[in-house]
Length: 407
Ligand SMILES: Cc1cc2nc3c(=O)[nH]c(=O)nc-3n(C[C@H](O)[C@H](O)[C@H](O)COP(=O)(O)OP(=O)(O)OC[C@H]3O[C@@H](n4cnc5c(N)ncnc54)[C@H](O)[C@@H]3O)c2cc1C
Image (cartoon, rainbow, N blue to C red; front, side, top):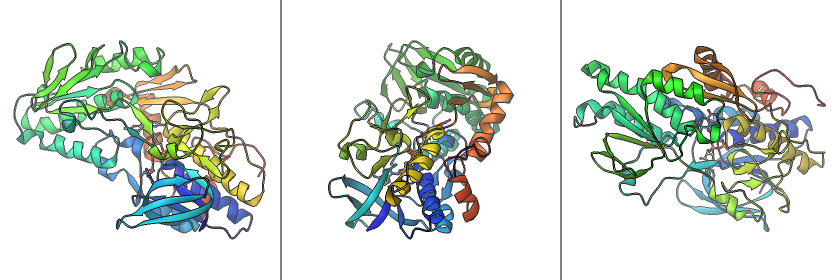
């Protein structure tokens, strides 16, 4: 039996655990916090489009041990919210049940791969550290492979992830091709079913994105979808076949299947609709955070499945779940104002503010911001209990020092 069980090992889970531990410690409460996740690391998922993705991780024990959070390596296979029990399959295959007083569901999201598409097994993606590392290995093996389409990559989906990996692949493929005098063979083609780039990003950043793709020579095929992947390349819905050794799928995201075990309303991504305290309405003792949660924010908006929201969702959910256990009042979710920062490879980046995504910076200025986010702000402190607990305070911004508010 654990007092607070947190399912997941991503940003939302880690910060939920730290925030719960912080409040329990502050209140002198002798209660347990247990985090259950299959892996040993916090994967820095927003960086998986970059080179060397296998290094994008932080050992969970370096964050959790110093603050007294127990960690259990396993995969939750079911949640019974009536009996307040979680079924967990350990890494040795053993299945056990774990009871809880309060639960935070923070098992994240996953890419929806088109499994019925002919040749789907040939598709690469950058959704998990394993997939991103496999793509990296594949890129490095290209010089030894067949010549046709050797340094051509087709990226399917021109949303946030598709744009980041397509622009980054230009540089990564050039780095692989250059020692073989084949830099001029590098070709990246972006395939998008909609008639516009970045359909969900809106028109604001589109001119900056278009300029960056032009600068990098990334080709676009809009209003087109992928029909099949063969050994030779990508077959498109308009009948064109692009000889390509690399085809990367980026379209579609879905919340963890465990959200379906919680008898509550979900949105069309499968995320639980929480109240402003990140509780799941009608399901006592259950909170959701990160990509499993669609929380109200900034008026009538709902959080995005993003790292930007996963961190504060974790802090607020962790604080509130511990407050609930101790009979203290909860705090309403209040993240920093919404922004986006889209990496555009060696063409820089584009940084926008507001939900209508007004462009503030492009090029190197935006790129400097992106580097700060990717290389600093989203990493938790390690092996330093005081700093971990300080940053777990829901009033501490990922972007700036402490906000005003009651302790
Ligand atoms: C290539 C890429 C680029 C991105 N770029 C950005 C960006 O620029 N900005 C931004 O804000 N966001 C970005 N994102 C999105 C961001 O990474 C996610 O929104 C964020 O990681 C969500 O955090 P999370 O903790 O909710 O879930 P996740 O990071 O998905 O972590 C989920 C955790 O739960 C664990 N888990 C899963 N199932 C179970 C189970 N059954 N039992 C126990 N544990 C389980 C997983 O192992 C993992 O540890 C990007 C994502 C990708 C893939």
